Amino acid sequence: MIPTTSPAFIIRQHALQHSLNTLSELRDKSGCHVLYSIKALPFLPVLEYLKPAIDGFSVSSLFEAKIAAEVLSDAQSIHLTTPGIRPDEIAALNQLCTHISFNSLHQQQSFQKLPKTDFSAGLRINPKLPFADDKRFNPCRLHSKLGLSIDEIKQDSLLGISGLHIHTVFSQTDYAPLLQTIEKLQQRLGQYFNELSWINLGGGYLFNQIDDHQNFIDLVLRLRQQYGLQVYIEPGKAVVGEALDLVTTVLDCFVSDGKVIAVLDTSINHNPEVFEYQRQPAILQHKPQGKHSAILVGSSCLAGDVFGEYQFSESISIGDNIHFTQLGAYTLVKANRFNGYNFPDIYWADNDHLQRVKHYDYQNYQEHWTAS
Ligand SMILES: Cc1ncc(COP(=O)(O)O)c(C=O)c1O
Image (cartoon, rainbow, N blue to C red; front, side, top):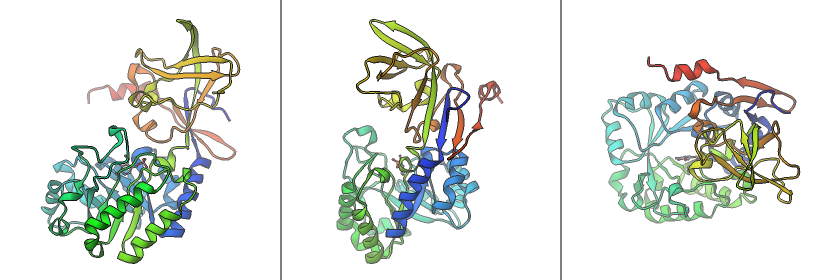
């Protein structure tokens, strides 16, 4: 099924369901609670679709907490952790969130000033056990802003605290970092675990790409049985990463210094992580043994608006479709209209239908840039 307009994001329900099935199995076997980290893709139809299959959402700001509260039922949880809480948001966050993991002592003290707190309080811990080589993705980097250092936690720090939060990995496909991190937490803080009610293991694990879940299941069962802890996970990319494609069209084609350049009706501004992290996105048409190569570029004025060089079985022509895959996480949410290029339409694909669910027009652009 090809959308009738271009460029177009396609949300693939089948892929969402596949992720949910994996998470449901983990939930059934281990008793963990699954939150979807909505920062990855907060599109409301996605949130509504996920809602019946999860225990809540994890959020990082007041707006995310608000949208989460609009979608969820009272029985579901909203967990917040963020380094940046504004003083004027504290009262609203107190009402909206069921769990808040403080990122600093100052945050903890700010909420203590409330006459009554309505959430379960936690601490985000920096376990000082780094797993990412690239420091841009490493919450345990030197001088990290994310969480209280495990070395500074004492019994006093846990006064009024019911839970711990950790999140230290990015796109991990095995559980070794999680096991090592929990072992370190147990060594340093295990004597306090019985006084806590919950632990949030964060996101960062690509559950669909892990074949053997036994270590995870055993870990969760142990934390539940040994300490009576409720165990939460808050995946983002693992839920939506494979569920969004971007279908684009070649607008122009020419040779530059001996290589074919194909200009697309999209740009890296619809997928900013390509530029931010210099990452080459996957396309369906790429054939590693293909005899024809082309550099796919975006329409914007930025010289580095380049997706990369790909191989094709046929030479590429104006009007061809280029179909990017696996863009569900951190793509649409970071997209922008730099150079005035409109956002792609958004389609929803279920088993038999492709339906356009969102279209942006000039009016949206004008409103964005009109002083109110
Ligand atoms: C605190 C926290 N939880 C969960 C997530 C979701 O991570 P992922 O999308 O890699 O699963 C993130 C991502 O940055 C995060 O910072």
